[in-house]
Amino acid sequence: IEGFEFVEWTDGNTDNPRTITMTGDLTLTANFAVRPYEITLTCNETQGTVSGGGEYEPGSQVTITATAKEGYQFSHWRIYYNKWDYNTIYENPYTFEIGPQFYDIEAIFEEIPSYNVNVSSSNENWGSVIGGGTYFQGDTTTITATPAEGYMFDYFNIYYDYGYSTTSNENPLHFDYINQNYQIIAHFKQIPVLIDSLYYYLTDAQNLTDAQEGILTIVFKIAEDEQKERDKEIKKYYE
Image (cartoon, rainbow, N blue to C red; front, side, top):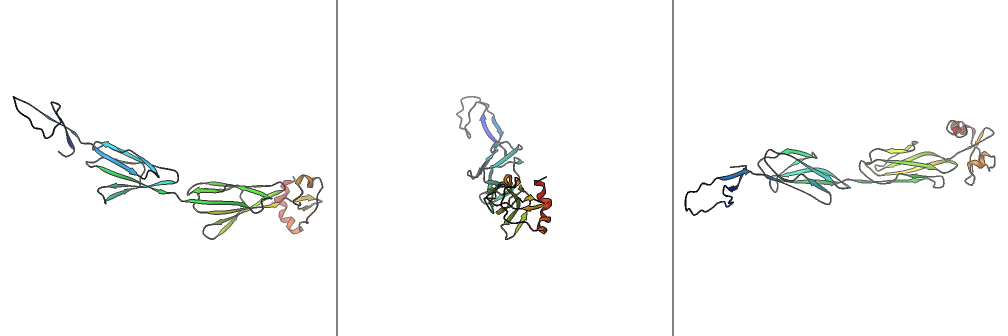
């Protein structure tokens, strides 16, 4: 009967068919059991692993799970009915009820795209920047610019894969979902020094402490109209 298989005769013999030489009365009963069906799971083992395969009775609830290795992600299941025909399932883990059949199931993985986030400083003597590297699609990163003494962060230039660029004054700069290559350049500017109600820039050879003590060589004086624009931003350093 479909769904069952022969186990043994009541005398323990497992031959089927069986030939018997009769020497007297004999009563035998054939014992049957529900036929288990096997789930065979396969995958590319360099890309991931699968679990949940084995023998199950019809009507059982079975859950199969695919686990991707680093650099890969699960794509879909292929449930084969024969060598060429299969059904595609995208759920993972996938739970289903065993029917009266055998199952050959393959987990398909795919490589996760990776992208480069290249970071640099427009002038390494004025400041540094961290947070670059190679990331998988969907990763996050934070780009942080750190100015050298006597300098302050100004802005980032952000260059995208698709031929356009933007600027940002946000520091640190957060990327919540990486899906392309980025070229990011951090720009810095000198911190002006307040003397006699006017702001002056320091030379590269001087530091802020010297300037505050009045020991400085003036490179150039900020024009009055530019000074007014900078007052709100810069004044906080001297309050």
